[in-house]
Length: 383
Image (cartoon, rainbow, N blue to C red):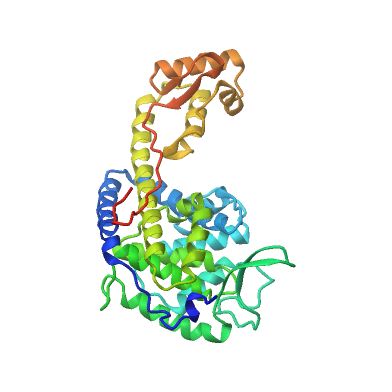
């Protein structure tokens, strides 16, 4: 079996542009609608959206790689880099590094891609590491760079990257292509096509000793932001995390062929789903502001604490709804007090009650926005 980089047509990728046409148009429409909605947010909500979006992507892109980070620490690091007030908590190197990379991506999305930018990102990601040979440079090891699963005695090789001696020349070709195909480049490509191709190409070269997945997804984000002409805040990594099994399967299949149509259709669906997830977050922030304004000075401290806790769950809501037991856990209220508080919140139209007695569950009286998967069929229709 040959990998994509071993084939004679590497890296002259092909794809069915007609099949992607509707997805590309939908993404552009969604980008414009998102920008218009954000303008309706107040300064405080815009700040919150930016911090939440960047920190969510930082946490989820790390979780895809199996690294679980502390959300509060990541947010504190991001706020500090934006010159905002923080709680001055101690931030570990891993949280600090991914936060720095994501803020760099946000601030410098319009800059051309370069080896130096990629090296800086990798240094940020490997902040505090002592187990790597190559930090802030491309890999040089003689051993094959493989993506494997299974036991040491019987490994399952999902992919093998080009040998280290080829990495510099492969990356020179990739970086030149990325800059040439940007919105102002001489060979400009549509947003989703360029972002999806860039991600697959970068992952195929796998140029670093560690950090390739996170940097590859950052490159996709950079491509999407350049096409939009502004930071997209698109929940790309968060959506990939939800579809992680399919993500790895799609990458593995694409690593064997240089016809990228199946991969680009999968990626386009994920990017549009991610865009919808981000738009839902903005609409949720608007609804949240209206709700809190309406309830101002009418809640006791327990009720306010419960509402703020549920709001942290975002536009898809508290999983399974809030029970009286959940309310007691969050607020420390007794059963009788919880019953009174919840009844009052329903009366104030802050909560909606679903079910009766011990089966009763409560949801915020603002529209929940569950996001469905987006798929591109053989005719290019979005389902």
